[in-house]
Length: 259
Image (cartoon, rainbow, N blue to C red; front, top):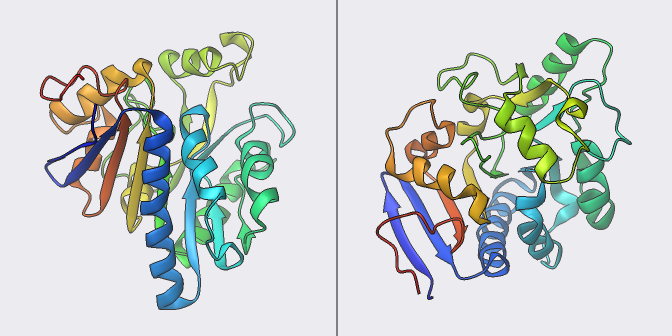
């Protein structure tokens, strides 16, 4: 299978034979956008999604000579009620897998175990407003979510940039399936998430989605109507978003080459 490229509405879609290829090409896109921002304003703001789907993108980014000391890191979401040392904490993921290896300018974490969640949300919202995001690296959940905007809570016109959400069963099962929690009863029922509004406000979006278990979500994202039944479909409305897929995530699309 060769690289395949097409557009769906405004969304550029690139399909690669393997997830490693996908990650490398996604990283080139991210690095170029970050370098442009640094050249223009001597700094850049980057959101990094966390989770297994982002491994190959992260690995490729870590090999690149980017001015990390001029880059501020943010993340997309965090569970409510778990601390930064919990194996499933997105703060821990970002710190151990990325921040400690590149020494960025700043890392801004969402503190899901804050004693005052309302104040924590306001603090992080303000950070995002003061530091407009140049690139957001995100994935798509098995239920079509982006960040933790599941179909039941996603709002394309959300007035907030962060909010507390209840995680639906499909989302919580995914966390167990990926090995972050031993059982669904261990998965927190609530999380803080960047909203659809916050994600769509980012200047550029890199969405990396490998794995066949995401193929239904990818199919819905590209072929169905743009609505909150598949929150990721909103990416088709963004002016600078690229969806990077491996052949397994893309295998239910009816119009691609299968070999």
